[in-house]
Amino acid sequence: MRAVSRIEAELPEDVRDVLLHRTLTDHEVLGDAPVRRTRSHRGEDLALALCERVFLYLPFEHAEDRKAQELAVERFRLLAAAAPERARARFASFLDYAIRHREVIERFGRFPHRNPALGRASTPEERAWVEREGGF
Image 1: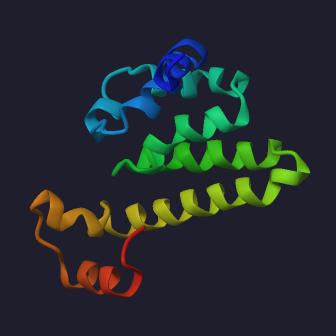
Image 2: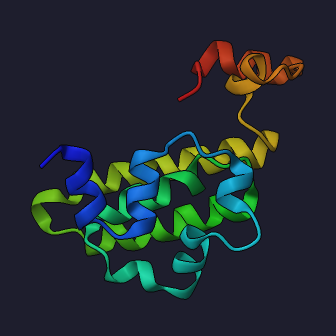
Image 3: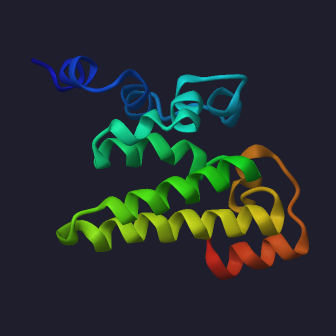
């Protein structure tokens, strides 16, 4: 069986969609009621395997939306707390990245390192941040 066929057959639909279609835009991820958002808001994501939940939460972490960022940090915090001891450091690093992404959105309202690709003008503060941090 091809790897994609196994993914299609074995993973929950929303996790599979994130894995196979990582080109989703913020609008598609945060639209009116996509499966990813609904499942996470209802707590159904907690029934998934820890590694599946990581992929499910990444669109929230990468969204230029404060509510999505809060959801990402909340969910990655739960994930880190649920991780077995042998994987605790790995899951703590996922939480750290979620917090760092949220801080950028809180500060700028967007990810400044995306500005050139999206044709957006950068503020002097954003340019300084990109020069210092380089993005993610």
